[in-house]
Length: 539
Image 1 (tube, rainbow, N blue to C red):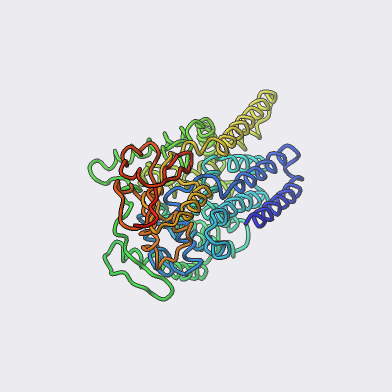
Image 2 (image 1 turned 60 degrees about the horizontal axis):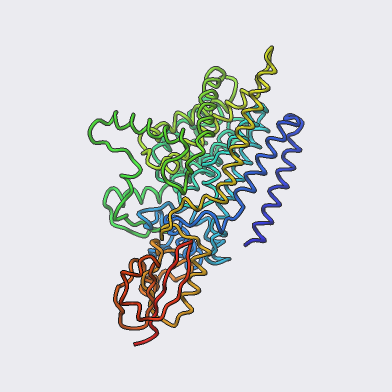
């Protein structure tokens, strides 16, 4: 996998060099330097240590195994063929699992291979967005501002460096907005691509469903108003999207209208025994208006701090850049409201902002860096517009304006540099020593040591996420139960069991397992935690 990743890295940097050379005529040297440096930075960040950092979080582990199982065996961990919505981990979106499946079929359960498409899509979507702004004659200052803010957005960098099922919503949304803009200023085929991508968002993350109908209607009205489409185009798009949304419609019937699970044509639909609705939608009990206001205030408070309490998506201590981003976003919106008539890009951004307001109001602020990623994307783009406005300031106080520009850009660069150093060095220390956060490479080595013991059963596997074991063993989904019976998670029994077995005990807890001390043992370390492994070869 590493040679392929290196090849793409070199290719992307080559494209960036060509892109900056192409844009230099209108951008000038200092804007070209910011754009080129920002794009190269995001490429290097996203592709560095993909298979090592961050540790595999539980939800990612489930999606990882499902993707491997789909690629190798054609079914997911619940033996479903082409599921519309996965039953794993309380319900997961499926689009990214299918995107990553071919690589895992080729390379096996390789974490870098699983995360590679996410990093690639994140980088290329941002690059294509910036390129589209430039060729569509958006002001060079806005092009520069959007490039710098998107490429240094910490939440976006984190989102592209691990592959939870819902992270795919970010690059797909970027591409949808990009093609929507191209549809306003370019050829009609971009409009068809826009609506297809908009439909695919339904397969990316259920949290955006609430805004998708609004975006459909708003874009259709805008294209109609600007005479970009006619009735014929509208009918064709409706038919195409109806076909693409048909599986989602079937899932809605099964999940919410109690239609029995079924297999239809190329896809399967099953009902989730438990949903995450309470974790993603605000409560409609009591004073709903108060719940909405509380949700909005809580969400933006988390955004301003840059931390929502969930370490896989946000890191505490880097709130300055988020505060700056919010201030710039407000400035961008204020400037845009005054000049919206003259810019198709600003018109589209205002439209997208209005359409995502239901997410702000009704999608819970709990872990908002997961649930509000589309909102964060809009805020970051507006911050780019605001920064672009500042970069264009000039007049009698040009010395002061230039000082503000330099200080602002330096604040973004220095803060991003500190964040990057922290992310690749100390960040993993934030992730608690628990089986829900697992270093995949260390887990593989630990499993190799365990397998060297001549035993049939392993008690006390230090992985709360059982899918980690399935990934390491590349288990057939039909035999998952056998693997789980052999490698049993949870606390080991305190007494010796019949048959050959190993008992994996944290070293600080060995006093609770005194009856196991009669057995031979070995001491091994996993993620800084020492374990005593007692083992019994036979009766």
